[in-house]
Length: 349
Image (cartoon, rainbow, N blue to C red; front, side, top):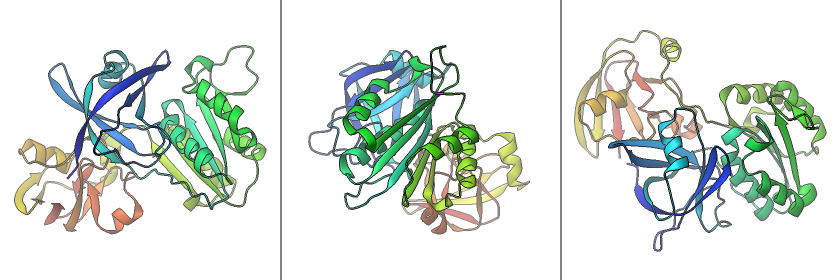
């Protein structure tokens, strides 16, 4: 079951006209423990309705005294607009403790090249990772390839330039702008396969390289294709989508026509039987039935709804948030999980 804590806002910094960094005080007696690349799920009450959203941390463990998330305003986005305009120092926000498998841990004995590709707010976890490399892995180098609309929309621009000045050749910083001003002399256009290959040819060559990609799905697939052409091993590529799964008709259609299925839910030893219709997720039905099932983002990103399938088969429209070990052990995300056989049993600790 997920664990929740209350964090007090220490400061709110406007990074760009449509992005803010919200920094929380560390609790006095129980520090928030996290890894670079993980995210917090915020639980907010907006207009009398409880809503949850997940945001990657831009702060770096053991380096930054505050725990920070950076939120870019989304047009029409209920939570992102609220966080950009309403949250202030002194506010207390309920959050689910950090989770996520898109992680990096520094090792001072290693000598490697960490290459980061990001676009827009996808830079948030990459910022945490690159600081981790620069400050705690002194024999390694890091490169950030970062796409934005224009110079004014570059999140962390001043901080990135300061890090470049401080660490010199250990930090390679490459921007690509889709709508640059006339005097822009860097890369132009969105980060795609061609930009990926061109940048790779210019970056330092290293026998040990790891690649982290975060941003819109289209950009990530383009970069992945470029890395494949460059003969990068799939095991060296790590991806984090910033596009929530929305259980689209296309995604559901790929699962096939599975019909209504009976599912047994076991929560801390108590058993419940539910019937899950085609095209509805296990979590949706469980919540409709009043079950106290764990959940948070409800979009396949945060893993809060993860349960262990001990019988039957469950198909998911998206399982990128699960590690290979999770999948092998039988864990499923119930918010995007659909029973594909009879006699499905899912257990929650």
